Image 1 (cartoon, rainbow, N blue to C red):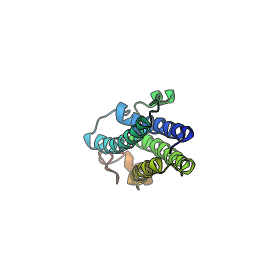
Image 2 (image 1 turned 90 degrees about the vertical axis):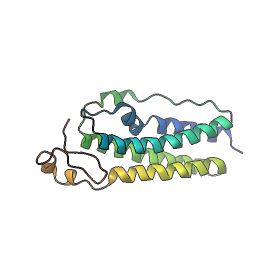
Image 3 (image 1 turned 180 degrees about the vertical axis):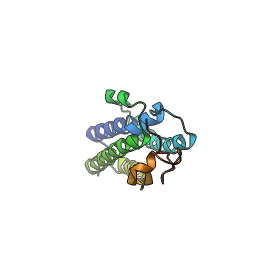
Length: 165
């Protein structure tokens, strides 16, 4: 049976996941030009992440715990009109911090079998999202490629990193 401390840790993780930079990017699309292919890749990661948020919320609801989704950090409001390549770097940092938080929560909730099963699923999704964000990017490896040639160079993630914001 879960104790109040475990539920509190899960609630904290729910807030961290539901108000992370990836979710903000999905809701606010903080770069200038709108490219359907780029948006599709981000939206897929956002949707997968939201599934994990829903699983945690359902767990807490079933345990009759108050669910608070929190608010986005105010510093996110400064992240408008960015070069996508800059935002990707920030997303990698944010995702790594989230994966670390998931690891810590799993460790602290190890005896809560029901919670750990959900946390393991969420960890898998977030590691996959992180891996996708970290895939090699030719435009980053060759900075001059981002400003010359085609205005629509795509990296391995399918994201256009050739535009500067």
